[in-house]
Image 1 (cartoon, rainbow, N blue to C red):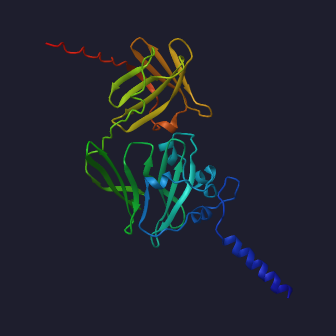
Image 2 (image 1 turned 90 degrees about the horizontal axis):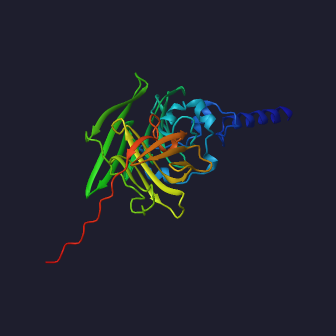
Image 3 (image 1 turned 90 degrees about the vertical axis):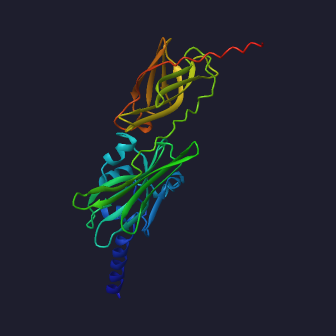
Length: 319
C-alpha cells in the first residue's frame, strides 16, 4: 500500500512539473520551454491587426521584462521603444512548422506605442531572430496587420486614405534558415506611403508672445499655442530624419523657466525637452530620455524658423 502511495505521489509530481506555467513574472524560475509553452497554440493562418494591439490584455498574461530578455534580446524592443524603455509584454500565439522552426507572436505596449513582434526559435528552442509585424503610434496608417500563412510566409500590410485615394504597402518575408533571419521576397507597390502629418493643435489660439508655427518643412515643425496661463504653452512637434527612417512626435505642455526658455517635463515621465526662443526661431534640445516618442537613432533637437502669419487681406473696395 505504501509503495502504491509513493508511486502516485511521484506521478503527481511528474505531471505538475510538465504542466504549463501559470505565470512568467520576474520572480518565477522560468526555463525556455516554459517561456515558449506560455504562448497559446494558434492555427494558421495567424493574423495580428492593429486593432489587436488596442485591445486590453489581462495582467495575468504579463511576461516579466527580465524573463523576456533572457530568451529574446532587448535590442529587439529597443529598436522601436528606445534603449532602457521597458514596455509591457504579452503572449499572442504560437505555432511551429513541422520538424522546423517555432514562431511566437508577442505584443509589446507602452503609453505611446504598441508593437506586435514575430520571434523565431529553432526546433531545439534556441532564439534565431525577431521582427515587428504591425505597429501603432508610429504613423497614421488607417489599417495595418501582420500575417503568418500556411506556407509560413510573413506578410506586413498597411494602408492609408487621403484625398479620396487609397494607398497601401505590402511586404512579404520568409524565414531564411541558412541566414537565421527574415528575408524580404516581395514588396508592392515599390513606392512608400507618405502619410499626411496632422497637427492636432493647429486651430487653437496663437495670440501670446511665443505662439506660432516654427517650420523647417511640412514634416519637420514645432507648433506652439496659447493656454489659459501666461507662463504655459501647448506644443506639438513632429520630425523626420534620414529620409523618414527616423521619426518623432510629441504633444504636451511647456512651462516658461526663464524669459526665453520653456521646459517640457511630465510627472513620472523621464522625457524632458528644452525649448529656447530667440527672435524669430525656436531651438529644441532633448535633455531626458524621450525614446517612447521617437525612433532610437534620432532625438528631439534642432532649430526651427518661425513662420510668418499671413496678414488678412483688406476687404475689396466697392465700386
